[in-house]
Structures are given as C-alpha cells and as structure tokens.
Length: 621
Image (cartoon, rainbow, N blue to C red; front, side):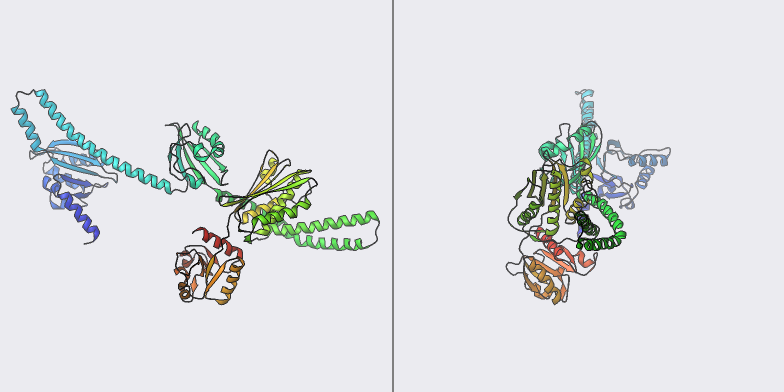
C-alpha cells in the first residue's frame, strides 16, 4: 500500500468511527467523502455512497422514497433542493423523517468549493423533551417552551461556532498565504495611516531602500526611511491622502538607487497604500538607449565625412607646413601658425569623434585608487587658471580595487578642466573620494556659477556645450559613456557654492586569491595563468578533472577557475564548496552553461572580463 493509499484508508477509518453521519460534496455537487453512518442513517444503496455520486441522484432517491413526505411534483422538489445546495450557505435545522426519527442537519461551505454536512440523530433528545413536558405539570408551559427553545438555540449556536472556527482557520491560512506571496514580490508593499505611520508592510523595505528599517509596523515613514527620503516623498503622500493617486520616481539619497513609488488612496481608513519598486536598471537602460541613439547619430554623421575630412586636414597641414618653412612677414607667419593650430584641433576633434562613436570595452585592472587620484591632481594642476586651487579629500581604505584606470583618469581630468573653465577666475575645485556601501563615490565640485537648467538636462548629450564655440561638446558625453560602461552612474547638480558632478562606480575590491586553474589545453592554460598572475593571484594548475579533484582540499585554496568541458569529465562536477568561475566556448543557452553555480566566461576573454568574473564569484562567498 502506497503512503497516499495508507493515508486515505486512515482517513476513512477515522470518519467511520464518528457517531454522526457525514457527507462532503464538491463544487460540482458530486460526493467527495461519506462515512458508513451516512449510508446507514438514510439506508442508501451502495452506488449512492461512492465518490463522484451526483447530489441530484441522492436527493431524487430520497424524495421518491418519501423521505420529505408526500410531494405533488417530485421533480420540482428535487430541483428546489439542488438549487438550494448550489448557494453553499451555512445552515442548521431539525426535521422529522418519514420513519418518525428526528435529525439535526448542520452544514457549512468549504473554501475550496462545495460543503460539508453533519447529520445527528436527536430522536432520544426529542422524546425526553416530550416526556418532560408530559410529566411536569408543576412546571409552566412557558418554562418548558423556553427550555426547548434554549436547547435548540444551543445546538444551532454550536453549529454556528463550528462554522466560525472553520472560517477563522481558512482566513488565517489565507492571510498567511497572502503574506507569503507579498513577501516574495520584488517590491515593497505597505499601508500607512493619516499620520504616515505603517500599519502593514511585506518586510521588503530594506531590499528597496538599503539601510531602511526592517520591521516598520508602528513606525512613521520618516523613522523608517530617514528625514532626507521622507522629505522627498512627503508632498506626494499629502496629495495621496487628499484622494489623488500618485506615481513618481525619486533617487534614494543614501544608495543612489532610482525608486518608483505608486500611492493609492485608502478612503475607508484615511490612509495610503504604497508600492515601491527599484527601477535603477530600467532607468539606466532607458538612459543608455537614449544616449546610444544619439551616439549612433553622431557616428552616422561622422562616418560619411570622416575620411574626406581627414584628407582635407592632411592637405591643409601639409600646405601650411610648407608656408611655415618660408621666410614670411610677421603677420603672415602668425596667420600660418593660427591655421596650423586650427587644423591640428580639427584632427584632435576627428579622433575624439571616432572614439565616441566606436565600440568600447572595459579594461579592468587592479588599481590603487588613492594613488591614481593624486596622479590626476598632479596632471591637472599645471593647467588650472591662476589662483584656482585643486583640493583633494580622499577617504579610502588601503588596498586595491578593480577599475578601468585609463578611462577613469580621462573622466576626472575632463571634469576638473570643465570646472576650471566654469570658474573663470580664482576659485576652488574639490575632488572627493569615498566608499559608500557597494559603490565608489567620486565627486568634483567647483565655486563657479553652477549648471544652468538646460545643462543639467542635456550635459551628457554629444555636441552639447555652453562654452560658446570653445568646446566640442564631447567631454561630459565621454565621461557619461565611460561611467556607464563599467556599470556606474553620473549625476549633475548644483550646491550653494557652485556645480557638482558625482560619479558612482561599482566597488570591486581586490582580494588576493589562491586559484586552482583547471584546463586541459596547455596553451590556453598558460595564457590564462599569465592573466591571473598579472592580476596578482597565486595559481595552482591541473590538466584534467581527476587531477583537479585530488587538489580541491589543498590548504589555502580559495577559488577555482575551470573549463566546463575537460578531457575526462565536466568542470561543473568539481567540488562546489569553493567559489568557482567556469570558462567555455559553448554558446549562451547551452544546457551545460545553465548548470553553472557561478559566473561563466566565454572564450576568448580579456583580462578585464576575467577580473570582473573573479570579483563577482568572490562576493558570493
């Protein structure tokens, strides 16, 4: 007997031990469960007690037998009782059967559909009541009537209590399921009252607003999120409390995430339902798409004329070079030099156009960020206007991080020189750096006039400039591109002192690893080993799965890098107790790749991609 059959047999045995008759019909009015007393009480044939029996057939049998007394139209009586059953209403009543017995019938609907009915033989109770009335002449009829009504009311109350207990059980289970579902939703669902106090929360607030409180029931929004965030959303909450639904987005001051918030008024309790979702990825994708389309337009504009423009500049530079070699009068020599300078500037601009419209790839490498920032300051200071000071405020722990050093250096130099141009006189430029959660935050501020509203909206667009013919309009656009390429964000705003540009770059800390490299191709293994050692990692090598399995328990080993397909097996079958990065030439979507428990590198890969994958695997420990 299977466990399921054993469980069903156990249930049937238990129901048969109950002294009352019981039946359960499903939502289609077919018998689901009945005990032996049900058949015995109504003297039903066996075919009417099998699961699946139609309620209509059972009622027709009882009507035809006279269970409900004489009927002028038996089919109408059957139809009436079937229609009553379809309503699934809780009920309790007592009736006398055709054989003189009295039964109490108590029924209740089920949450899954259908209903359960319990039949109790109360013939003896009724006889005792009649005997008591006949033999108790001293008792007034009023007292007896009251006693009978009380007994009937108690029985009905007991049935009602049973129905309420079942309803409470179903409600509790439904509430638990609802909470489980809401807690699985990747969003924060909540309700606040008119005083901005949480009355419900699915406990997902910290996953949307990092640093927020977890259990917020009874707390105000300000207490849960902090004053800066509350100040940002309070006007919207006030509008929602006044009865106007709101949908808006804010940037979380602490984490920099972009959060979309929907507020739905709750007029019944003067509160607000809240749905908060992290849409940072969506916003970045939208911005990237918009920027990519503009960059694509720039590429289309330049690709057709770049060759001819380059040839033209070559001719101009050649002719002006010949003129410069002649003994020309002073003003003519100056004109030639000015023309040469303009042509060289055109060549530089053409190169920058090619760089902004061409493909890019990250070049991550271990970097001492504090040293890089000091080098940037050293490079930038000679180019600053007289009287302008560049201050450094570096609050970074010791150690290296993975960065695209060349791109970051170009970006910071661009921002510093832009700030210098904006100040237009003596002033202060500040370069600040710190770690904020999982981000590196780099801020360049100046004491200039700040960004105009148009600049705040369009500064990252290719060719947009406020330098009145002195700039190419590609500086901030390139900073934006380079920042987005490594998964960061760029934000522009104004402070009371001037303009500010904030770059947030993903923090990819460098942890020196002892890595087991598993690759059965000697040449590939040698190349990857070089990439790993250049990144500062210690490397142990294995040329087969069997060799690797014998080395996974070596002391000090912290990570594995393995090919998926080895000559004697699969890399995915290696011991998964250590962080693992897999590499393969299989295309994305291959079933073997889907079995990977960590990052997968597609061969061939660059050192930057390898470094990023190792950093990702390290975070999973």
